[in-house]
Image (cartoon, rainbow, N blue to C red; front, side, top):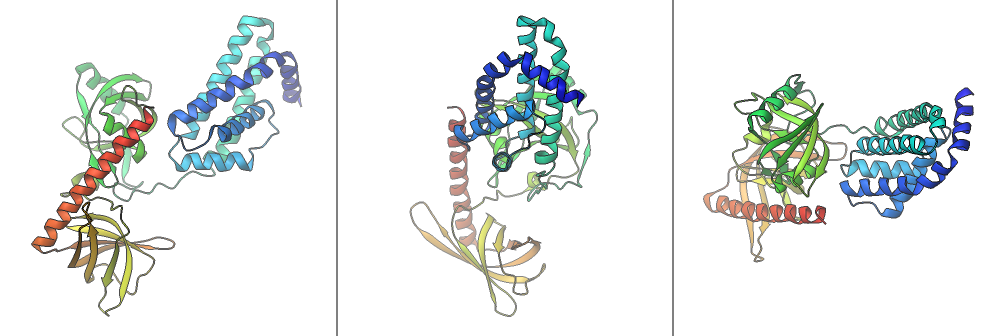
Length: 376
C-alpha cells in the first residue's frame, strides 16, 4: 500500500515528464530494436514500447499476449531482448533523473520510487519472458553445454593482449562455411570487451549468434562468448560472458561442409532394400547429413548405398551414386538426422568438390548482401 501511494504521488508530481517523455521512450525503443534486426515493423515495436512504458509506471499491469509473442519472435531471430530492455530502462531512468535535477530538485524523493518500479518491471519481465522462453542451447557442429568450463582469467589475458597490441582469431560457421579472421582488442569495460574485426567475420558472428575465439599460443583452449552489441559501421563487436571450451570439432574439419540450398532428395537403401528419403542437411567431399522423417530400421554403423542429384549454375545435373556408412543418428521429436561418411569414385568426388565450391561462393555472397543490409 505504501509503495502504491508513493507511485500515485510520483505520477501526480511528475505528470509533465510522464506525459511528455512517452514519445521519446517509444522512439528510443524502436530505434534500438531496429539497430539489431529488421524483422519487425515499426508499428509492432511502437505498440510494445507503449505497453512497456505503461507497465513501468503501473506494477499491476501484466505483459500482454501480443508483447509476449513479439518478444519471442525477437528471441528466435537472435535479438538479445534482455540487453534491449536493460538499455531502455537505463535510458528512461537517466532521463528521469536529469529532468528532476533540471526542473524540480524538490522531487528527488521520487527517484527511489522510480528505481523500485523499474526493478519490479525488470523482475517481472525476466520471469515471464527471459526465464519462460529461455532457449535450450543446441550445437549441431560445435560443443555442447556440458563441454565447457568458466575461464576466470580471460579478461586479464585480454588486457595483456590489448597492451601488447596482439590479435586473436575468431571462428564462425555460416551455412557450413568456416569464416575466420583476426581481431584487435579496442576497449575493455568491466566484463565487456570491444573487438575490431573484418566485416564478413562480424556478420557471420551475428548470424551464428555466438562468438568463438580460436585457441593459440596464448589461449590453450577455444573460447566462446555472448554478443552484446554489433556496430557494422566501424566493424566492432562487444562481447562478454567468455567461457573456455574443451572441444570445438567444427574447427578441425578437413573439408568444407556446406548446407545445400536445394531440394535434392537422398535415397538411403538399407539392408532390407527399403528406402529412406530425406533432404540434404550438409555436404562435403567425404560426408553428408540427411534429415528424414523415416528410419526404416537404419542404425549407426550400417553400410548403405546412397544416391542424390546435384544441380550446378549452368543447369547441369549430376547424379551421385555411392556407398557410405552411418556414423551417427540424431533423433528429434519428429525426424532423424543421419551423419554419413561416403566413399565416392574419383569423378563423383570431383563433382562434389565443384558443387561445394559453387555453394561456398553463394554463401559468401549471401553474407555480403546481409552486411550491406545492416549498413543501410
